[in-house]
Length: 206
View 1: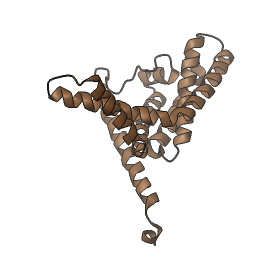
View 2: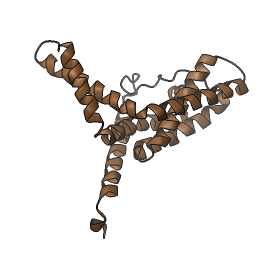
View 3: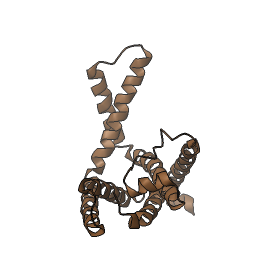
């Protein structure tokens, strides 16, 4: 877990990084990958290290963060392909479930391959959707932690990182899901509009 004295800085990083990911995730994708890789690596490393002095935990956080940032930046292309493969496999299961039976393993493999192949030319949209929704949740957790929300502070501290889970909110916290979805859709539209403007032919700009 992150030391108590660093919980507010951690919440600031979560909020700022989430905002960048949500509204400009595709444009700054390498930065977003590095940031989230660092955060995940730091949380995992400090969890493995266990209790200790602030200096000890900081060392583990930095080492784990650097490792996480490196791994995500190296593997980002394969991550997009895996997302496409997962979507393809899910589509096969959904289609065959409507027919009242399970798809053959070869059908699932074929759909997974098709999804992986389709994700390559469509990776821009895969990245935009992933960063918009992931960034919106990170921004929300960071903002709630800064506002004094105990569950979000626990998430920012890393001692219970999934305590605030978007698809399974605690009783009385359903509004958090609505805010998350609104932020995600706003980020999605912002990124799509920004991308369309960037690709617009120069002749149309004049």
